[in-house]
Image (cartoon, rainbow, N blue to C red; front, side, top):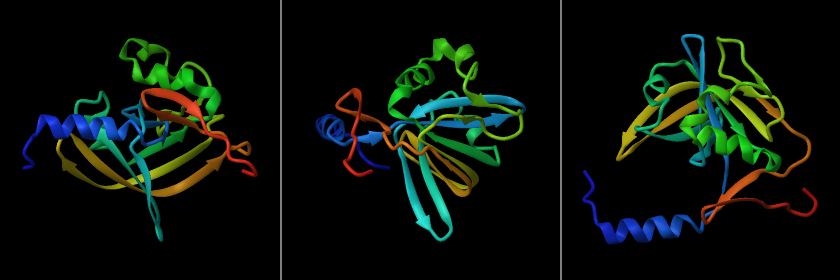
Length: 166
Protein backbone atom coordinates (compact mmCIF):
# COMPACT_ATOMS: atom_id res chain seq x y z
CA UNK A 1 0.00 0.00 0.00
CA UNK A 2 1.25 3.49 -0.84
CA UNK A 3 1.11 5.99 2.00
CA UNK A 4 -1.01 9.09 1.47
CA UNK A 5 0.70 12.48 1.65
CA UNK A 6 -1.84 15.26 1.10
CA UNK A 7 0.85 17.76 0.02
CA UNK A 8 2.23 15.35 -2.55
CA UNK A 9 -1.29 14.45 -3.74
CA UNK A 10 -2.10 18.14 -4.26
CA UNK A 11 1.17 18.76 -6.13
CA UNK A 12 0.52 15.68 -8.30
CA UNK A 13 -3.04 16.85 -9.06
CA UNK A 14 -1.71 20.30 -10.06
CA UNK A 15 1.04 18.83 -12.23
CA UNK A 16 -1.42 16.51 -14.02
CA UNK A 17 -3.52 19.56 -14.93
CA UNK A 18 -0.51 20.55 -17.11
CA UNK A 19 -0.69 17.31 -19.11
CA UNK A 20 -2.97 17.45 -22.14
CA UNK A 21 -5.03 14.30 -22.70
CA UNK A 22 -7.45 13.21 -25.37
CA UNK A 23 -11.02 12.84 -24.15
CA UNK A 24 -12.63 9.45 -24.59
CA UNK A 25 -15.89 7.73 -23.85
CA UNK A 26 -15.30 4.20 -22.63
CA UNK A 27 -18.33 2.11 -23.59
CA UNK A 28 -19.56 -1.35 -22.72
CA UNK A 29 -22.73 -3.36 -23.11
CA UNK A 30 -23.78 -5.37 -20.07
CA UNK A 31 -26.82 -7.59 -20.38
CA UNK A 32 -28.01 -5.61 -23.40
CA UNK A 33 -27.69 -2.28 -21.56
CA UNK A 34 -25.27 0.28 -23.05
CA UNK A 35 -23.06 2.04 -20.51
CA UNK A 36 -20.31 4.63 -20.79
CA UNK A 37 -18.16 7.15 -18.98
CA UNK A 38 -15.89 10.03 -19.95
CA UNK A 39 -12.22 9.24 -19.34
CA UNK A 40 -8.83 10.69 -20.20
CA UNK A 41 -6.69 7.83 -18.86
CA UNK A 42 -6.23 5.80 -22.05
CA UNK A 43 -3.00 4.79 -23.73
CA UNK A 44 -1.67 2.50 -26.40
CA UNK A 45 0.11 -0.45 -24.82
CA UNK A 46 1.67 -2.47 -27.63
CA UNK A 47 1.64 -2.81 -31.40
CA UNK A 48 2.08 -6.59 -31.29
CA UNK A 49 -0.60 -7.40 -30.44
CA UNK A 50 -2.37 -4.06 -30.98
CA UNK A 51 -3.57 -3.21 -27.49
CA UNK A 52 -4.77 -0.39 -25.26
CA UNK A 53 -5.14 0.23 -21.59
CA UNK A 54 -7.77 2.31 -19.85
CA UNK A 55 -7.80 3.32 -16.22
CA UNK A 56 -11.21 3.38 -14.52
CA UNK A 57 -12.02 4.70 -11.06
CA UNK A 58 -13.56 1.97 -8.92
CA UNK A 59 -16.31 4.46 -7.96
CA UNK A 60 -17.34 4.86 -11.64
CA UNK A 61 -20.84 3.75 -12.56
CA UNK A 62 -19.68 1.08 -15.02
CA UNK A 63 -16.76 -0.26 -12.98
CA UNK A 64 -18.50 -3.42 -11.69
CA UNK A 65 -19.68 -4.33 -15.17
CA UNK A 66 -16.28 -3.53 -16.72
CA UNK A 67 -14.78 -6.34 -14.66
CA UNK A 68 -17.07 -8.92 -16.23
CA UNK A 69 -17.68 -7.91 -19.87
CA UNK A 70 -15.71 -9.53 -22.69
CA UNK A 71 -15.27 -6.30 -24.73
CA UNK A 72 -15.05 -2.55 -24.25
CA UNK A 73 -14.99 0.36 -26.65
CA UNK A 74 -12.77 3.42 -26.63
CA UNK A 75 -14.41 6.30 -28.49
CA UNK A 76 -11.88 9.13 -28.94
CA UNK A 77 -13.89 12.33 -29.14
CA UNK A 78 -13.49 14.89 -31.92
CA UNK A 79 -13.19 18.59 -31.06
CA UNK A 80 -16.84 19.16 -31.97
CA UNK A 81 -18.03 16.57 -29.41
CA UNK A 82 -17.42 18.39 -26.13
CA UNK A 83 -21.14 18.10 -25.34
CA UNK A 84 -20.74 14.29 -25.38
CA UNK A 85 -17.85 14.47 -22.92
CA UNK A 86 -19.94 16.61 -20.60
CA UNK A 87 -23.01 14.38 -20.96
CA UNK A 88 -21.10 11.19 -20.08
CA UNK A 89 -19.45 12.93 -17.13
CA UNK A 90 -22.84 13.96 -15.71
CA UNK A 91 -24.76 11.11 -14.03
CA UNK A 92 -27.98 13.15 -14.25
CA UNK A 93 -27.88 12.90 -18.05
CA UNK A 94 -27.71 9.09 -18.02
CA UNK A 95 -30.93 8.64 -20.01
CA UNK A 96 -29.69 10.88 -22.86
CA UNK A 97 -26.27 9.32 -23.36
CA UNK A 98 -27.00 6.92 -26.22
CA UNK A 99 -30.06 8.72 -27.63
CA UNK A 100 -28.43 9.73 -30.94
CA UNK A 101 -25.22 9.34 -32.89
CA UNK A 102 -24.36 5.92 -31.47
CA UNK A 103 -24.40 2.47 -33.02
CA UNK A 104 -25.99 0.35 -30.30
CA UNK A 105 -26.89 -3.29 -30.94
CA UNK A 106 -27.21 -4.63 -27.39
CA UNK A 107 -24.34 -7.07 -27.79
CA UNK A 108 -21.18 -5.12 -28.60
CA UNK A 109 -19.94 -1.95 -26.91
CA UNK A 110 -21.67 1.13 -28.37
CA UNK A 111 -19.67 2.98 -31.04
CA UNK A 112 -19.92 6.73 -31.57
CA UNK A 113 -20.57 7.04 -35.30
CA UNK A 114 -18.62 10.29 -35.84
CA UNK A 115 -15.85 9.91 -33.24
CA UNK A 116 -12.24 10.89 -33.97
CA UNK A 117 -11.39 7.20 -33.61
CA UNK A 118 -13.08 4.10 -32.21
CA UNK A 119 -11.39 1.00 -30.87
CA UNK A 120 -13.18 -2.24 -30.11
CA UNK A 121 -11.14 -4.14 -27.54
CA UNK A 122 -11.36 -7.64 -26.13
CA UNK A 123 -10.76 -7.26 -22.40
CA UNK A 124 -7.97 -9.64 -21.45
CA UNK A 125 -6.77 -8.48 -18.04
CA UNK A 126 -7.10 -5.91 -15.29
CA UNK A 127 -5.06 -4.82 -12.31
CA UNK A 128 -6.20 -2.85 -9.28
CA UNK A 129 -4.08 0.01 -8.01
CA UNK A 130 -5.14 2.66 -5.55
CA UNK A 131 -8.53 4.12 -6.46
CA UNK A 132 -8.43 2.77 -10.04
CA UNK A 133 -8.07 -0.38 -12.08
CA UNK A 134 -6.09 -0.72 -15.28
CA UNK A 135 -8.01 -2.64 -17.95
CA UNK A 136 -6.04 -4.10 -20.84
CA UNK A 137 -7.70 -4.81 -24.17
CA UNK A 138 -6.51 -6.35 -27.41
CA UNK A 139 -7.80 -4.26 -30.32
CA UNK A 140 -10.13 -6.17 -32.65
CA UNK A 141 -11.46 -3.31 -34.79
CA UNK A 142 -10.59 0.33 -35.50
CA UNK A 143 -12.54 3.12 -37.22
CA UNK A 144 -10.86 6.50 -37.84
CA UNK A 145 -12.37 9.85 -38.81
CA UNK A 146 -10.45 11.56 -41.62
CA UNK A 147 -10.25 15.11 -40.23
CA UNK A 148 -7.84 15.02 -37.29
CA UNK A 149 -8.84 17.38 -34.47
CA UNK A 150 -9.32 15.46 -31.22
CA UNK A 151 -10.93 16.93 -28.14
CA UNK A 152 -8.30 17.47 -25.43
CA UNK A 153 -8.53 18.22 -21.74
CA UNK A 154 -5.96 20.55 -20.17
CA UNK A 155 -5.96 22.54 -16.94
CA UNK A 156 -9.61 21.77 -16.25
CA UNK A 157 -10.79 22.87 -19.71
CA UNK A 158 -11.75 21.24 -22.98
CA UNK A 159 -9.95 22.41 -26.09
CA UNK A 160 -8.26 21.49 -29.31
CA UNK A 161 -4.79 21.19 -30.68
CA UNK A 162 -4.57 21.28 -34.44
CA UNK A 163 -1.13 20.41 -35.77
CA UNK A 164 -0.22 21.80 -39.19
CA UNK A 165 -0.06 19.11 -41.81
CA UNK A 166 -2.04 16.58 -39.77
